Image 1: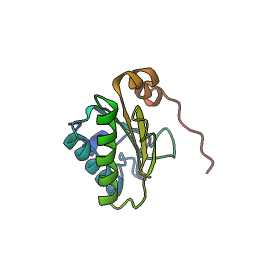
Image 2: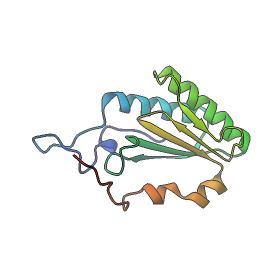
Image 3: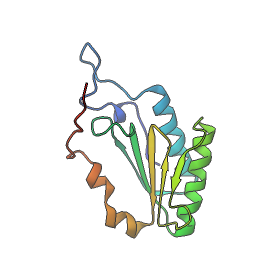
Image 4: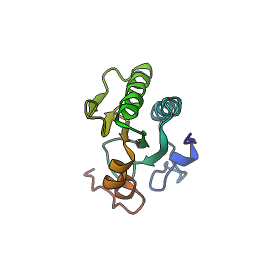
Length: 140
């Protein structure tokens, strides 16, 4: 299981007034922990988490996982949706559940992508959203 630690989601660029690194909010961290636990229970493979706070305002964290087949991807997605609801996300937005190649679950503070392995390799979201991605310009 991908272990989520407070330090793993304390990134550069997020600091408090005294310059100390700012951790993920308790609510976002709790949601991410519950989602990772549901992925582990569903036997998701190659689970990766990406801190999005420096990169976009879409969400705080992205979780990417693989299933062995379309049926497995669908079963993982069902567990993730149940975990979202149990964590208080009343209506997570879901795309791709009927096809089972790539399911996207938008839980507000967390975005979860569940792929079949060959589809994951093709889109390579880890590279797209990894450390080399430029920061989003924000108007203050």
